[in-house]
Image 1 (tube, helix red, strand yellow):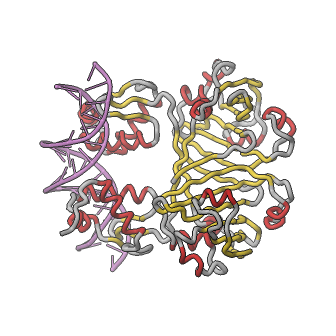
Image 2 (image 1 turned 90 degrees about the vertical axis):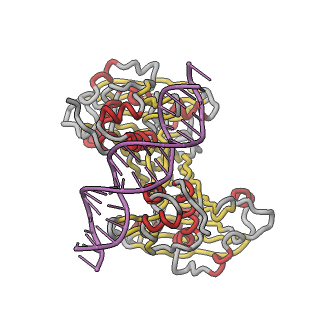
Image 3 (image 1 turned 60 degrees about the vertical axis):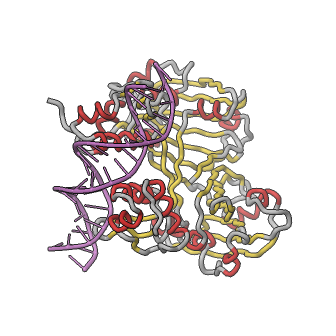
Length: 232
Length: 232
DNA sequence: CAGTGGTCTAGACCACCAG
DNA sequence: TGGTGGTCTAGACCACTGC
């Protein structure tokens, strides 16, 4: 008598087991939902949820009529959480502090102007600040805010709350983009982060939009030896 | 007359709109599923799917009995795809090639031994290889494979297929961990990647398990100016 | 205890698209 | 055009957990 898999987690795990154990091989089509539901002793909706979840992880590919195939090249997907820096620091057990370095309105350089879809000579709000963890420099933030999209930002108290945090709470955005790269510390960056000129530092650039309106472009430089971690 | 939102995407979008527009504010509890279903003119299952999806993105938090609250600090979650390097290169329109630098069995250094949960003096398979994009060095891969977990790897043809790709296809894993950091190119790494000693390079370390069995530890060093991108 | 979300079921209709 | 996945519904039971 076949074992019953009558909740979506059980079906999910059993399906993954069959893929791992080679019962269902890469490129092969697996039985349709209805058949699996009958075999597993569950409803089609339950089988559907299990398979849909697996499909979201990239292990299988589903198409109407064509059916469900085990991916040839299982692209794994990891989830990366984009935290507020204060919470990231506090979660690590360190004391968080924050220091505003400069703030002002001026037309951004060409690259920023393009990334924020600004017309030439349009001023934007430029905020530079340092985030500290346990009193040590942690992240240097260099941010441009589109004051056409978020005019309220001009009156935001960036001396007491980071632009990072203020924006998360007050400036809605619908989507964003993040780019991670290794950077060589300039003299100024090194000095601010307590590193040496030329040190290899992790740089993260985040851009957000509210619909099609660019909201902000933030460049974060992490202090030395910082690691970003994810599980998958 | 209220507008009908009778499919989960519509409910999802409308709920997000209410959060963005401040109809539902951070920290506030939103109406229960049943109520929303009535208001939206859909079934509770549909409202549930919409809200569950939003919860997965981190914008709302749900607890039985307590209800659903808009997150105080909307932690955004980005999805990061972990591709096979060959496919990553080919997707960029460049020609991919691969060169094995060395391969052999030997007891790994202490750090690797610990990360792979190996007993002292246990040999592991060490594979070093270079991935090229359009003939230019792209990624230097330095990998240790646990041959207790994956003995078949000893006979794998790593001269023609990258360990990266072979493992994805032949060594099942259930979970993994990824760590990203900035590194300073050693003389050897710089030479292999066509960079200069001391250059700032992006390093990625991936570790995978099959259940509780460590499978492999891969250290990837990207050539200069490489950016990892994600959307959220 | 009782309100809320988590999930299952059976049945239905539909969209997509490979043959 | 028919097989397959995508989704909806109504109703049900259950698991958590705040009160």
